[in-house]
Image (cartoon, rainbow, N blue to C red; front, side, top):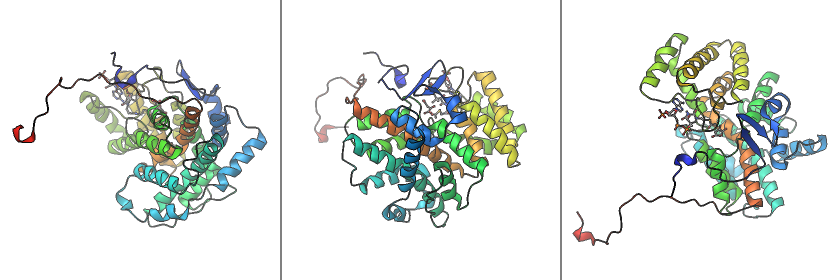
Length: 372
Ligand SMILES: CC(=O)SCCNC(=O)CCNC(=O)[C@H](O)C(C)(C)COP(=O)(O)OP(=O)(O)OC[C@H]1O[C@@H](n2cnc3c(N)ncnc32)[C@H](O)[C@@H]1OP(=O)(O)O
Ligand SMILES: O=C([O-])CC(=O)C(=O)O
């Protein structure tokens, strides 16, 4: 047996959803740079699920379906009052709420393609309400119902703050959602595919994927980046802080990647947004500190920033609580998880690799009274 640690370089499936070739990321053959500049998040959802960009009518229909399904069932809203919400990480709450949503979906275990598409819409539509309801209830605020006439990104901000969001904030969230939507066979997407390859249901697949995204080596890195920036505090402290971490062989969050070597093509878009937004909020030091960290880590470790690095200062500038950064990633990435789940069902085979056993050889059972 040959063991490939972390499955590095192992090609585990075929997929027609997104690709990373020579450090270029495409969704269904469209360069991420092109999509980041031109596409809305709703167009990207359609692209990932149908492998083509929608025409005007198809886009209008998807937007309407997302709006109509955006509100949470009352039981799911009420459940936020049933646990110690202040102590809970929002990713744990999101994981539990998605699982709970499955209990109120009559089609949860209906396995035909049309039913699976209907569930995909319902789940995608409700993700912003889960995150924003949690965020408000833990502050003792009333949840805000979604508005039918707002885009997906605008509704997210509206339900979070209770105010009609500004154009610049809507554009920033929309672009962040486009940039995070899918990423080939990353850890959370692989988790979703492993789960549903047993022919388990969509809610189980997404619940499992949220659990995988939560970790700081994956989606949890954006929150960890903001924690690091806050700890550093001033531009003068960047050098001693980063050098201290590197000398202790600690990882610098938001840097490195399993697949990209020259750099993550999404990072430059978030860097540009970070510069603009931190200037607008009168807090350019977050951007300046980030740039200084980047120059040290790329210079000394040859590790470029990944998608999580500049997204931290972007979300902070938009007034997002730091522990809601990874949930926003999930609100976007669920579109990719759902595309992969639907693709897995279409051409399914159980995913079951092997492990090389390294434990003791054959042993004889020892009765309990004879054990040490
Ligand atoms: C959306 C996303 O999931 S993007 C990734 C988000 N995660 C992070 O930003 C966390 C920080 N980064 C990392 O931990 C890693 O780079 C990962 C998890 C992204 C990729 O991990 P892997 O491909 O398994 O690389 P691995 O962790 O084995 O690192 C290889 C070498 O580079 C070093 N390295 C990798 N990333 C970093 C980092 N961020 N800071 C310092 N050193 C690093 C490792 O210490 C290791 O060095 P060594 O060979 O001397 O032991
Ligand atoms: O692909 C990966 O390993 C992690 C990543 O960047 C993502 O999921 O967006």
